[in-house]
Length: 114
Length: 109
Image (tube, rainbow over all chains, first blue to last red; front, top):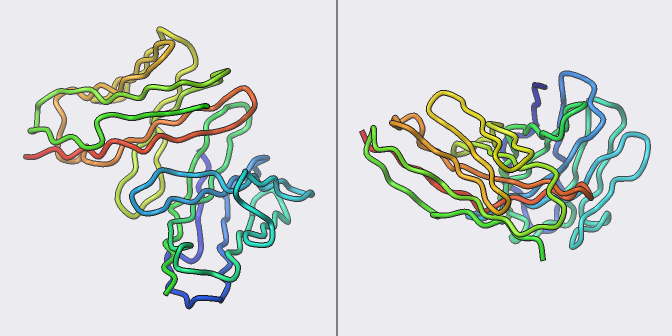
């Protein structure tokens, strides 16, 4: 399976600021996904990051709040904009392996907004 | 409405005490069911994929099974290192991906 890294691993941010999270994969992948895992809850898909086109957002998530870039087949970023304490969460990127339905996850970024 | 429900929410077992975790789903167009293990502060680690009723997969002390309405993760003679949160997820034919809320397993030495 692909090796996935995320930066930063954790951060504490002030209300109203923005944070960009990076996701790097050690091989080229077609599908990259961004999830949020709020305290005590399960994973919720934010968007699918498409290479060469705009990301596809799930219901309840908008591009102005969570802009995503996917400049190539091994890298993506998620920005959490104009943060509020409700954005405190773990943010995870995942990749789909070619030819299978399985998703593999990065280690996550733990974000705390004060 | 598509739903994935896991039970129990938490489970405490003595080392060596076998048990099962449940994942029930009500979805339209199941494409696959997935089990993950998640340790505190880490991303989910892939365990199994199941595609059709009657299918079984095994890995060490874990065995996953699938019926038309639910999946079980059987843990045989668990060890303390099996302590983690176990998540199930379903992928639908429209490519939607839904996770359950997980079962937190604690194995006591």
